[in-house]
Image (cartoon, rainbow, N blue to C red; front, side):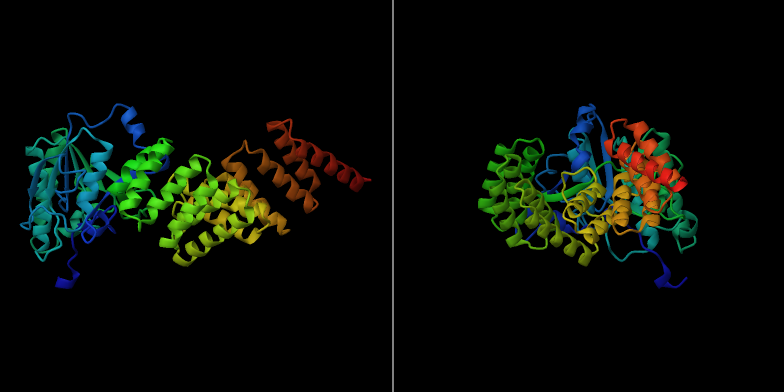
Length: 463
């Protein structure tokens, strides 16, 4: 087999991560994950799970041992690459940080099994096997592997020297599982995910799964973003609604790092929480002066302007959001880390545009909401409304039908479907859907009025 056809072992999960995302060497700044929206890690801790009395082995790209949130947390470190245990990729450190933050009482074992070096494929694979055996011998109860290959074990075994290496990995994983150890493998790493049927394959929401893949057993409930350590404490207070305390911490950090746009954005959020909206706008403007392309800051500034009833200025901010997102193809991003739904972010912005009679932009936002979450009934309904406003009644009815299928209790969707049918002269059918709206909400005056109006039309037609 030609050398260029030999596949490589690689990292899976957040594989776009770089070491500079974890540690900015020039500025001497470390980063730490924070967990967004409904993914609040406090819910995990409230369920009494903190990782106490559990050893967790992370077999990955190593670790930055001087990271302030990790240096006192690691029980053992071992290198299986011959290059030392320092992380040159950032991936292993990120996984260790996620574990440290979600399971604060867990014992962390770090096994470096990945280095982007020039060794035979069989050696890449055998490093994984050695790491798993070490984790077993070290008393791990959980083994996390984000290293592997997209190809299946049968295909990999055909490469020179790899058959035995693949067997070594699968044998080690089988031994771990037979010893009661939970083995987690990142989705996409079909090998070693295909070594044993009891392996827990962990997917990330939004990441594609292809037919040939070992499909995820579970999806990660956490959606972390990385922020400088000096932001972390303030952010933790902000999430708990302790705005004054958070603001004081962000101000203190801004004195040391005035060029960090996030510090100004989070100060603005504190001031928003304190209902000091004008002060919040000033802080958002400082953040945008540093980073004008920050989509979330434009969105949050728009929300704040709505609170000041400065709707025209708010829409200008949303225009910037759409322009930046469309230019960069960032449809799937959250517009604020405090929301529970990316789709709802876009739905809400669509509502603001619809209220301003900016129907093209509203349709754009509703389309994005539906693309992100096809189960968002509100977005389907409102997209249908825009089509009805454009007098595209047949098309609008299709959207209302999806909305009622997704959420049969949605009065507006039944009403809107009835209204659209009446507009194209299908009066008998429209009455059926007005009746459904009234059955759900007998106090729905608009449905009652339209039913009376359409009944009159039908009667006139019969006469």
